[in-house]
Length: 396
Ligand SMILES: *Cc1c(COP(=O)(O)O)cnc(C)c1O
Image 1 (cartoon, rainbow, N blue to C red):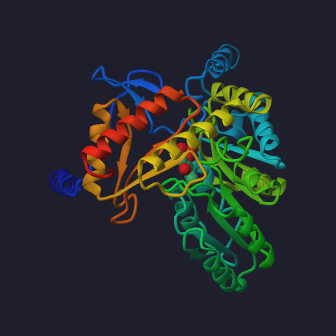
Image 2: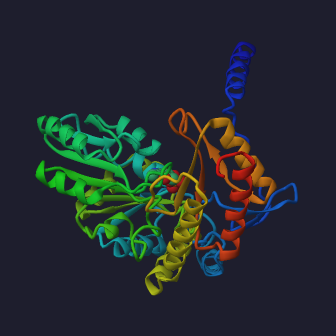
């Protein structure tokens, strides 16, 4: 039996390779950071991590994790409701709610699980979900697991959202769901307008702050802070795997009764293991740090502005962004691969994105800025972009 199936898989793998879509993983032998070492021995500057605040190798978080290994052990070997809840889990949930000014929080093993488990317990076939066309895969999967009627609006298109909300008046309850920052362009969802429309059509709002928490807004509290609408959305999801330390874990935070139902009914919460106490302990320390000082956000915002200004001045075509994501548009898939390969030779690690990750003819290099970058790192990257951009005829 396996022979036939093996041949089938081999031919699928070959198709992926022939289409130039095969993903190879580079192997890193150092901690995550602005400067990393690859297994080839090459040291490179990393501009493609979600390590927005440079916390992935932060000494204070490492210390908090180590301390908790001594006093809370390594793993929980249980889901939360059996014997997998420690004081650290409860404290982290409380701290996340305080940070976002919400009522309660529920932790998951990942934001993929938070999104996978949020819709099905809350909405039925009588209800409607109105979803942005560019929402993250985990939202799309979560919506699929739910029986609610689905409506889709074009990315950040408020006229289309209004049209869908009018159609969704046929259902009992309505939930509009959007990413806070869309990861391919770095654009921010117009959440102020979304909330306004939701109010007009008696709908609730959910925002996934995975790429915006810690990043967007003066103090990093995300898109609700940016638009001054803290407390005006019912559900926020987010990850501990990006700006917030980069280890693992996700959360849903929002209205008390919503979180309470999720604890009773959300399948990835009920049937999947508790996050390790060390991750909760480091998470608590991380939120404390963000509450004590704004230096990391300030540095990230300065770095993003500096890099984007310099690249624009050089003549690169940059997608409008309000986040720490800077999409350098090259349009051609092969060019984006070649450009990224040449940048790696210059010691700059970035990735070319092309179809099917982005629409055809929209190939780009996505640069992600971090508070962990020094000005010298930014200057080196800008210099490398200038050199290769001229070599390849992208800029003059
Ligand atoms: C990265 C990401 C996720 C998944 O987060 P994990 O915690 O890594 O599972 C979910 N939603 C969005 C918008 C993301 O960018």
